[in-house]
Length: 349
Image 1 (spheres, rainbow, N blue to C red):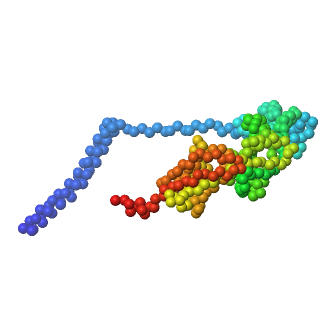
Image 2 (cartoon, rainbow, N blue to C red):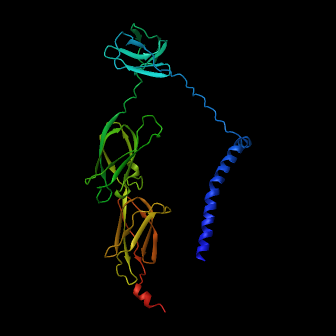
Image 3 (cartoon, helix red, strand yellow):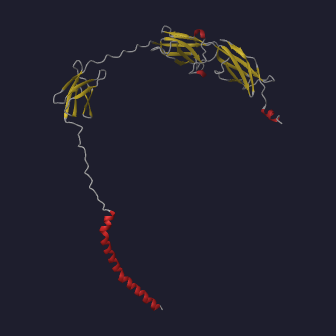
């Protein structure tokens, strides 16, 4: 049985080996025979040669001519380090005159040029010239008249000292001088400030002459314009250099008060707030009562004030009080109810 299978396999291999070359030859013949017709059906691809690129001719932006010149003023004197400008074609050319007023511009086209001479303090002048072998003389007109100078502001030093209505330190205070003339006055005075030393002295070096309103500010209000501690009857200054020293009187007053508990014992740490009557937008720095329940508010301009005392949740507003220049006004005693936080918690159901 195995021999029969081997015989069949051998015959088939022989048949394949015999007919395979014949089939290959027949296929090549058929492909060659039908080639022209297939090309006609599909169409032959035609490639065209690209055109050669066309470039614009290169134009050199420079010429070969030279311009030499000499620049002098109206008196024939050379002008040194003077900028010279010319445009040839599309290119700008620059040069500076030397110590003899001479300059040279190279690589120009041989054509008439407009040359500009830029002289500080003189009108810019232009000249129509042509490059060549000869030196071109350029003479500028007279210089401009100098601009009128502003008149000098008269100035002189001003020194002074503060005269307090009440005893107290003045170190750290600030003196502000506000001009009375409108701010649009040409060359008018401007607001100026200076500090006050421990002796109450101040100084304005080189103060412009003019009319001023004097304001004196406490240390906590430096840089502002309120509150003004200067006495209103002596806060005007006419500074002309004839009075180099000035005494400035203050119109300050003070408030003195005491804060107690319901049992009349002193209450320390209570907060006391003060502001001008009807003007809550300008409060003074708050002060706190001391261990004896006392407090003092100094450096108050004369006027009416509202005083409020706070401790915890309790607030008491005292009657309006009048502050007088040079007087320490005593406030009514403020009695506040201060609850013990521990007792409040234990009393809750």
